[in-house]
Image 1: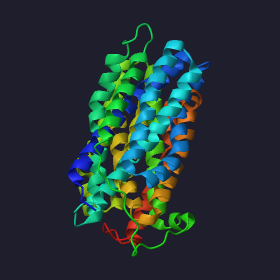
Image 2: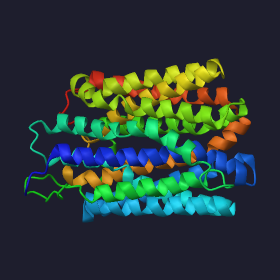
Image 3: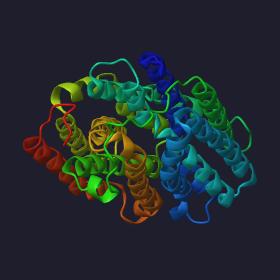
Image 4: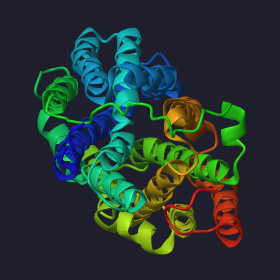
Length: 404
């Protein structure tokens, strides 16, 4: 088997991560506002966004198992096609003022997102088939650098949303969904150049264990909890922010700027997150991310000025980066090669089940609980993950590459 270039594969996956999060930023910035316009009830405004996460939840395990059979490149290209169709359908739904079609577009986008979640795991595969001597350190750095591709979205996503919102007059935001289709097309074409050979089973490989046995490991529990709480907290607060800012009298451009800096916070640290994990351990970085999320909650609870929204969402992005990349890296220690597809699929199934529920509830929570009290609901979950990570760090060997 030839040894593909790790740098080339990471660059391709980072580019696709950038495309995906450009599309994602456009969707998050506009979906709730479109929902307010065409939904039968304001409390249903975030249902289309929730349908995206429902689509991701339903597709994440099949996507992982499919890639286990046909390989990363073919599977990820199939996912990109769903993104193209979703953008086109979303634009058509806005033109027709069809809330049902807009929900359907969200479902299709969710399938695209399900496949895109595996860019980070594909980076770990790229490290495994590369010539790198220290595979575990290479995994952490590859995952981190691929996630760094999303930094581009922090600048281009909101700007593209603002530039295309009036592209199809008089249908506000229809142009944004055409832009999503084009961005998904770019990602699909780029993926055709990915080179990650499927790993053949070796005689020395240990047999796959039952899923329950794998997920009961402390390392797996910590990895699952970190990624889940990070993503649910981030998604819930990020989804509600444009609605909260609109209720406070801020313009669309203001909320787009806040989301822009949030996305910068999500991905800018990725240039060094992998190195921090290799040096200090994933558990310490997860705990640090939790502290940053607590800072976000405190700032949001303290006031509703533009500066509060901006600073809190930036810290939310930083906290998500440390917790999510730390959890992803930790998960690669919890499974054997023969267990990869089912463990990664189960991880993202749990993750997006919780995210779907939180996204569906966010509109209603904003109406009934209101913005500042809503932030405080996330505090116990974040504290629980910090505790898990610190306990695991004290009890386990924290050196990267030591299975637990």
